[in-house]
Length: 150
Image 1 (spheres, rainbow, N blue to C red):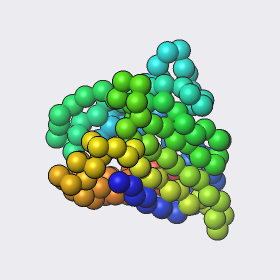
Image 2: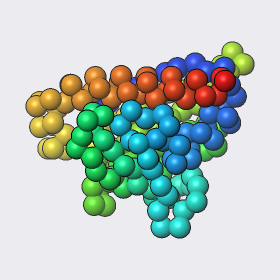
Image 3: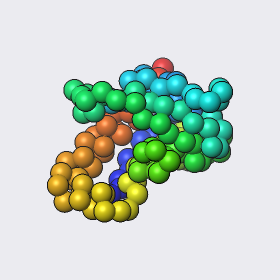
Image 4: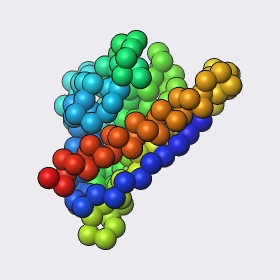
């Protein structure tokens, strides 16, 4: 299961990238992840850096922590991370920043890793989750846009 959303922003890529790649800002923009913090001595975005996010699923619960690892970290171009279950990646989130018309097209995407659990999830409610993720990605990007365009 995967999907993406793109929103044009009247701001340079570096301004948007700086907000997104510092995961401590996540709570300002995400409808579900209301806080995040770097782990293991990391102080900012770097390939392989770990952080954890505090999630309130569907904005109502349950509330839980996820551990994530940065998988893409190219300033002003892309930022991505995988959500871990133990040491196994189960979901991947990615942001791409493309200069366009004096601003930036920002694409947020998610992709769940293939496997038995993903297949079962897809059959039993996965499409509802996909729709929720699309709605939340748009909301996240619109919130970022409001800040970088202010």
